[in-house]
Length: 168
Image (cartoon, rainbow, N blue to C red; front, side, top):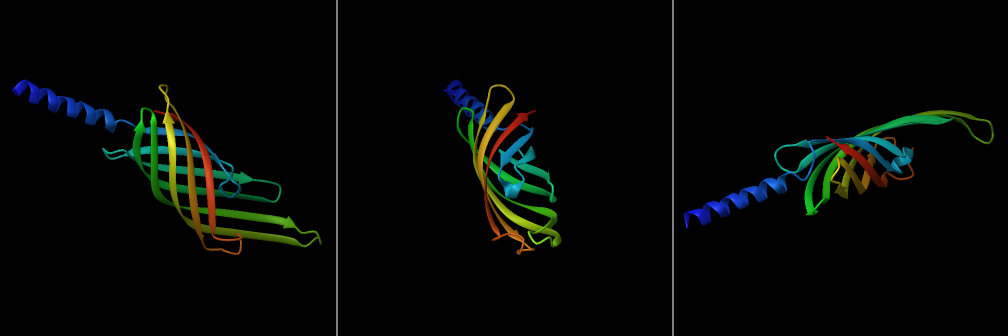
């Protein structure tokens, strides 16, 4: 009887350890989405705590003929295993963005505008961890901007992104 109880406890402990290892300690890569015109962002993820939680930081830098800017987002993820290498995650976040415009309209009038705003974000997505240290993800990130509201048509942006990250 003692052997059966010991075997059952060992099995439960092994199962708990296996379920706790569904995310890597670090991951770095790209997140491709609309993201208010930023398109591609450098993305870094860091596991926190002993549970399946992590922090994600995304930095997008963009410049063009008439504008340049940056966007930095920080998010907290709770990660749950679906099956095998599939996980889903959700969590809150926030960030800051700054745009600088220097352009002429059709009448030749010159405009030089700078906009800086902070935003609140949520994130929900699904990811797949390959047997090699590679992860792909698809996520949905609504963002609510605060400040310089005349820059954006509205303060709500729905960002859908595809990510590819190297895990280490």
